[in-house]
Amino acid sequence: MISFKDIEIKDKELITSYTLNSHRRNCDLSFSNLCSWRFLYNTQFAVQDGFLILKFWAQGELVYMMPVGNGDLKKVLNDMMADAEHEGENFCMLGVCTDMRADLEAIMPGRFHFEADRNYADYLYLRTNLTTLAGKKFQPKRNHINKFRRTYNYEYIPLTSDRIQECLDLEAEWCKANDCNRHQGTDNERRALSYALRNFDALGLTGGIIHVDDKIVAFTFGMPINQETFGVHVEKADTAIDGAYSMINYEFANHIPEQYTYINREEDLGIEGLRKAKLSYHPTIILEKYTACLNNTPVEQINW
Image (cartoon, rainbow, N blue to C red; front, side):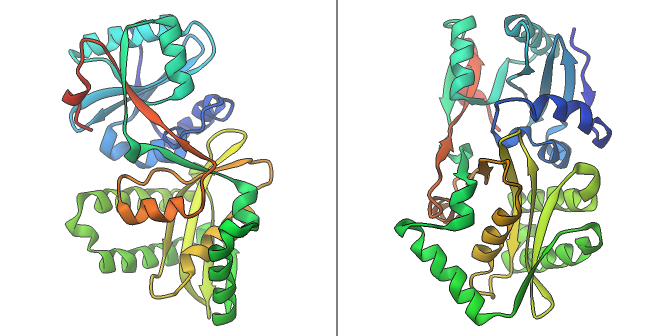
């Protein structure tokens, strides 16, 4: 039997001792994401036999993440299957990347079927591409940056705990303009964002703000996913300020430590405008993620 417990901020050191030392790059493993979205997914975790195991309830369906760690993966997977059976639920895992799929097929051949959802693929960029915007393909981005510099008297400053309220104020303005309360997805995002900002230091987040004439017009924040990948979780800007999104993206990339080869800017959720924006920065990797279910569980029965 696996002994699961609710995830809490105090578990940060233990959980990140697994995630930060993993080769996994998917945004689902960011400690901030795990904590900030636990209200929606009832997130739980356990440590067993050298592995971190994550368990969620998504829209009433039980789902796990592929365990993170080292040891006898087959044994741990069998224990997870037993846990699902004890819950009276089917056994499925989300966020299974291509290399994890290969691991599953190697140790349990023919046991799982897999289905990818393009809407939940992560966008990974070379940090150096976002910091330099070099080359012909990035010319439109450089044009946006240069126009912003010519047009506005701006300042980039680190996001610190004493700046949280002005970020919340900008987010409230953004939500008013975008009718957050009418859309469950944006309302959930608002709740997760507010939690992250109010627990900014405890979660270990890093962020930045852009001021134009001493007024906030954009902010962003994120945290490392592993030793080579930094996750950008939130980016908000005043859409009345032309180029604010481009500038906060550029400035934050230039303030992320050089140890990080990749920047993960998360999924597009099938939103046409968001997909277009993410593709316009020419991702190095579109990280495909699969749902993996035991063969007796049709994927189409899972509603996330």
